[in-house]
Image (cartoon, rainbow over all chains, first blue to last red):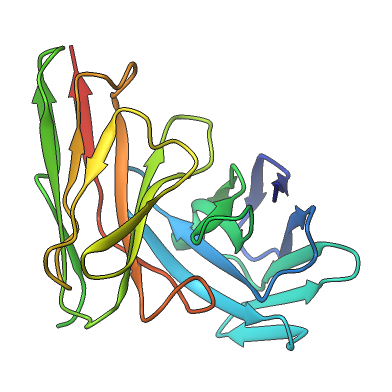
Length: 112
Length: 113
């Protein structure tokens, strides 16, 4: 069964810093991995989808990488802003049923 | 604008009552999903449907039921058999299965007392 772990569980940094969020998964036979953002009390917003054939994807200040062989993905946020404060979730298919297996998320606070 | 709508945003029920959560999408997606989110936990899959008139149990289907009579609609019923129904419920869809990008609705917060 697929298991997804996110480290750290929480992170607080000053505005302007570059930062890295980590995600690991146990079953490397995935065909994609998706990063989401969740604001308090809201649904999930898709940030980046990396297909298994890709090593990274970029969207604005966000860059996500995928290393299937080591079972790891990272989300790099450049020049962080207070508006980046949210919970970031990674998820990938696995576990038999169709649908995503999620990590518990990284709660990010960017201090002005 | 295309998207997923869930209603209501907040729902309150007494213990022992069944309650139905609505999920509608106008993205023309074939696959739809229901997840549950509890504080400090990752999202967990309840049910999914890859095509009209067909659905499958996810990891935590006990105490829940679904129907998929129309492509755009995938309602979730939380029955009185669900031991701990208070949670945040999220609906999602993809064009066809988890090999595609998954899109989420705004969620329904259910409180059962």
